[in-house]
Image 1 (cartoon, rainbow over the protein chains, first blue to last red):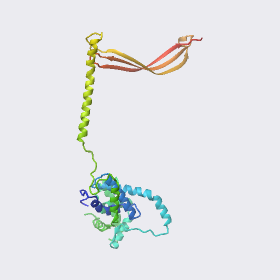
Image 2 (cartoon, each protein chain N blue to C red; image 1 turned 90 degrees about the horizontal axis):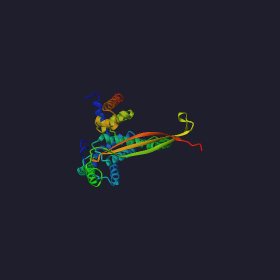
Image 3 (spheres, rainbow over the protein chains, first blue to last red; image 1 turned 30 degrees about the vertical axis):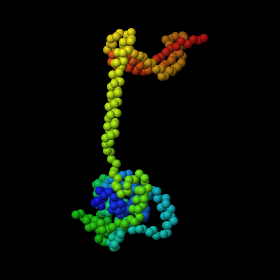
Image 4 (cartoon, each protein chain N blue to C red; image 1 turned 90 degrees about the vertical axis):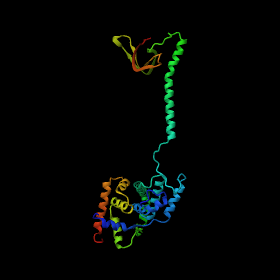
Length: 164
Length: 164
């Protein structure tokens, strides 16, 4: 992650960012494939506009914007599928490589977090963005970003206290 | 260290699922599809404002030429008047005074206000109200300078109406 700002090769940049970007996009999509589509569209758009890859706030804002557009575009299809598959147990692809039960519990607790707290947590923990970059991406103040992060951790800790 | 350091460590150990291997290839194809995209392996620089010295020089030269032209145009009437004075019956020495050079009267609105009997007159008169703009112009033959005064004017005309 440290070399992203100076790396001139987009593949290197992308390989470093991709897992975190896809995880970030997964918050708004129902499948990993959809999240990858969002990331692809966002990265291509970001790159074609000649933005500096070191401007990670803008990159994540682009992913978020395209993910929200994706939700709007996809809502009709989702309703159709929800009606058709209402009796079928949905297959949820894991967003993390889970190694044990404690991690499984952690992921389950993550899913219970409010969206605004989870997105800050995802950006901070797995994408290593600063609160300045998070604030820029979400168009909120740094204090708000930091507060949401703390609330997220507090909520996780509360839910996981027997497990940890 | 804060209260959440242990939780942050736990979260940090969670590894996001790797995106599918073909995601990079899909992005590469999408970038290649754009003909204007620069070489895929080179990071395009963010387009910022940068000074184009050639354009700046050309612009300054054009501005200087314009100023020079305007200056020469201002000087020209002085030469002309001296030439004209030699062939004109007017006094050979030009006075440094403004002399009347013209009057323009533009009627831009006329309204017929019907018949009236002004001042207890027994004969009806048609009242016509017209709005004009008059422009007086003076010129200093020595310097070529002109002075123009323009003002709106409203005229009310009473036109005798014949009963025959």
